[in-house]
Amino acid sequence: MQLQSSLLAFSLLFYPIVLGKITNLTCSLSPLGNGLDDTDQVEKAIRTCGHSGKTVFEQGNYNITRKMIWNLNSSTVDLNGFLNFNPDIQFWLNANNTFRVVFIQNQASWFVVTGSDFVIDAHNTGGIQGNGQPWWTFFQSHTREDGDGRPISLTVWRAQRGVIKNFLIESPPFWSNAVAESSDIVYDGMFINATNTDPSFIGENAVPNTDGIDTYRSDKIALLNWDVTCGDDCLAIKGNSSNLIARNITCRGGNGIAFGSLGQYVNMSDLVDNVELEDLFITRIDPNVQPNMANGIYFKTWTGTVHGVPPIGGGGGTGHVNNVVAKGVRVDRVDEPVHLFQTNSGHSGDMPSTLKFSNLTFVDWSGTATTNKIVNIECSPAVGCDDIAFEDFNITGPAEQLPSFICQNVEGLSGLTVPCNATGQEVRSRAL
Image (cartoon, rainbow, N blue to C red):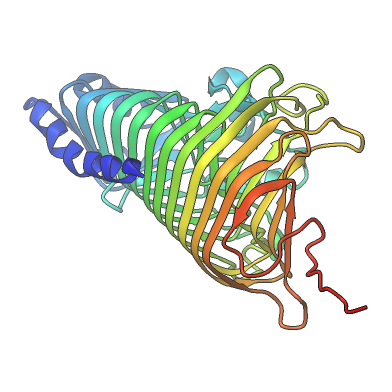
């Protein structure tokens, strides 16, 4: 793919280009401390220096008590400290107190970055403190639903030519990141930690929906050098994401790297084109911290039948996923290394999905699985899948079980050294 070289060149060259546009205007701020509200001073600094200027945050915690948007143009932000979002759960669950700029599933955001030609550098000392533990504990006894108001920690929306680097997100209550309706965005160095510390829930997935990032309606996105501990999708590539690369990604616990879910919105097309994933490590961690490690990479769509309306229900959407390469992948005790299914939230008797997968390539895979389902590709009978290729694919399952390679409704399968069929069982001829 030419995509990788062009985006990497962009990430290397963009920072000095932005610096060349900045004036001598600099805003510096320090935390007020003692539980005082920093929101006003943060917003004032961004208003003053967010266009053709530089904003410098000293180290420490900046207490944020209301929704906030940064409109950055030809500017840099040195975020040496943490934006510390007050865990007032009922306040944030009020839809008036968050932004609803991410269309998919009507998700809430408490912090939005928009604009063009900007760099946010947290220098590995700053970022966002989401104070997620009260949220996780609260929702152990309250119903969770998509679109219920739990806020995304960092949303990049309608932005162009931006860099976010050396950024830490601690204890996100929900998705850590979302990028929507944006282009030419580079995330270089992202550390995410969603780890339950409540002893009441040791050994459970007490941190659901803590995705590392969800991409939506965005083009030319680079995710470089990520380390994600979470209870859901490490990366989630959603509809109309194109020309995306992810390189040097570590996923610790959760569901693995997802394409989807797709096809939730009837009469809308989800198109995913040109995705390259390289140098991935997907590993199971201490089950007392996070018991789940469901997949390496998985693909999921809704069925062709509509059940209710989004954000909770849906289905019937169409589209395609085309030209995906995943190479240099190491999996450590994942349940299913490669999984594709098109029955998300489906019911018996549903119409099959018409969203089509094609040109999926898996190169240089190694590691271990906890089940014998090494490859489980179940394509829709309505459209099937075309051109799925494997090369140097070496995953070991449990020693006491024969490995299973399931391929349903696949045309143009290549590269596996064992049969891959509808049952996952090797068919041996028998002499008569």
